[in-house]
Image (cartoon, rainbow, N blue to C red):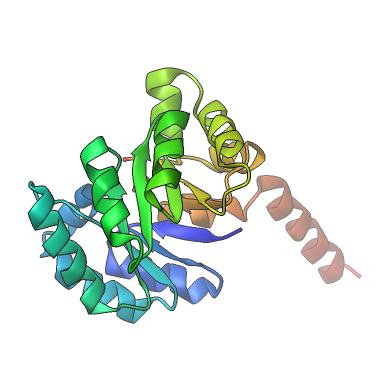
Length: 210
Ligand code: G3P
């Protein structure tokens, strides 16, 4: 059960790495665009900052260009770069070609059928978008549950993404997600509860008045 940071920001990556227990970082083109930097430069920085895997999403417009982009990204750190590939029929073929040599995660998954196809293509991970699925289809955790059913008997693992709150994160875990990827603010909120703060304050007060 791994926890990933969903960000392309190097400061976020440093903060998350300092926690000492994140599994790695997932990026996407929108997150990289926010940095204003070249995608492969961001990837090179992230693999230096975190100890774990860094997921890089292929964005080139043609299949042939995405294949070249895949090898270029992989070459930056072969032992720790995982390719994120948006799920389409064309990209299933791309994953089938790459998966023997490079770990691939099929992303932007909105149906159990897509997860089934990702397994057939040789993906190592499937990435359903929980919050978006709740917003657009009605039940993000239900999507995760259905995908977990479909994966039964395979070694493919679910990384639940598009997580906007601690409650949504835990709903995804309870629905069967093997891993979570979340923005830094959600990660930092997960370990806090106002009643814990209140209890800590009570303990401190008792100690001071003993
Ligand atoms: O990185 C993929 C995913 O987490 C996107 O999330 O917030 O754009 O739905 P969001």
